[in-house]
Amino acid sequence: MGSKKGALRLYELKLTLMYLEPMVWRRVRVPRDITLAQLHDVIQIAMHWENDHLHEFVIGRKRYGIPMPDPIGFGDPPVDEGIVHLNGVAKPKAKFVYLYDFGDDWTHEIRVERELESESGKRGAICVAGENACPPEDCGGVPGYLAMLDILADAEHEEYGEMREWLGDDFDPRHFDADQTNKRLRRLKV
Image (cartoon, rainbow, N blue to C red; front, side, top):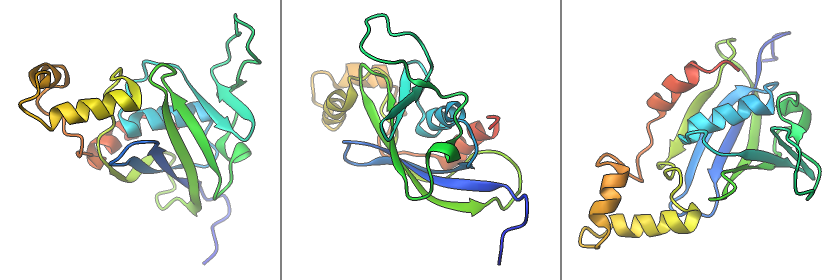
């Protein structure tokens, strides 16, 4: 069965937060022609980040992000993510990197798994699968998060109560709710 002329084409992406065990990942479908700025918004929602920190994409040898001058002079600013379309820089089977929070250094591998036709024909992003909760913001990157998990696994740990108070009683590192994620994604214009 061929695709209808003018049908909305999607990319199915797998977003994997690197260097964590158990793995934190999401599978999302997005219009293939969204801008990288829009993809940033999708990633923030899908991973349950709070969008409080800087980010950039690294695709091939180029960096894409919010263009701003480099006052220290370490290099060229990133290419403006707001004018670059995903299908202009990545095709099916491509892999690239999304970095979030340059202090905690959360590295995400983005894999374009396949291209498909939208069943609904409506523009939007949807999360079709995922596993495990995303680490909380400002927890100290991978080492800090792993230490946090060790503390949470031991109710007798001297920092357990303080950690529970900071995270709240409902934080479960193995929990992921696709329905809740999709409620938020439906509000996003892509």
